[in-house]
Length: 149
Image (tube, rainbow, N blue to C red; front, side, top):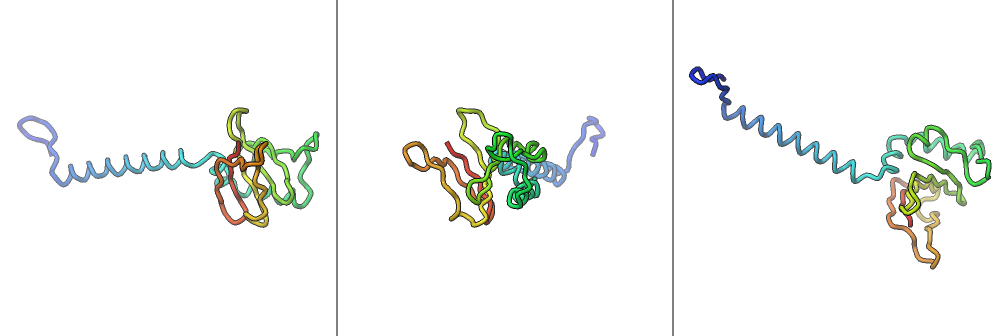
């Protein structure tokens, strides 16, 4: 509503309350979304967005159709997985391990497929035999994410 004398816009009380409430809700949603993105590790969000790419790689390895690297140290990384940040794939017993981009002083992020669940995981140890895991997260019955030193 425009004030006839001053030409300024005047808001009714319900309109002003509605606008303030809308601004607060949009701000809260934006903040929550930003905090949630920051809290989810890139490897986990890559898995959640491209689960079928990871499952197809595991199926190819299990079927014996995955291409070995030239040095026989793991498998060639599929381009769809490379786009998701995977730099190296290897098989350890029945588990398939996907390594993600990291620099040498940083901890190593790994996504692990374990067909027999948690009991079949080989927990990494350091040179003294102690557990080297910094973080372990179960994504579902057969998929795990961990960060190791």
